[in-house]
Amino acid sequence: MVAKNDITGDSIASRVNSKQYEDNFDLIFRKNKIAADKVQDGDQRLNYEGKLESYYGGSWNVKET
Image: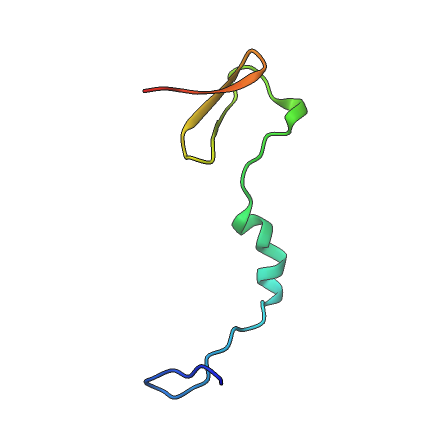
């Protein structure tokens, strides 16, 4: 059974990604990542919980507020 738009009656289907989308995918969805071998004291990032972490003394530490 094909999904249909209740108002227009058209079939609902995903479109194929355009060449422009494919070419710019990394620009759209890229996250700034720090390479593990280039981390320096004072570098910061957001962890998976959205909390700010700072790198000091060889490990990432969450800044408690």
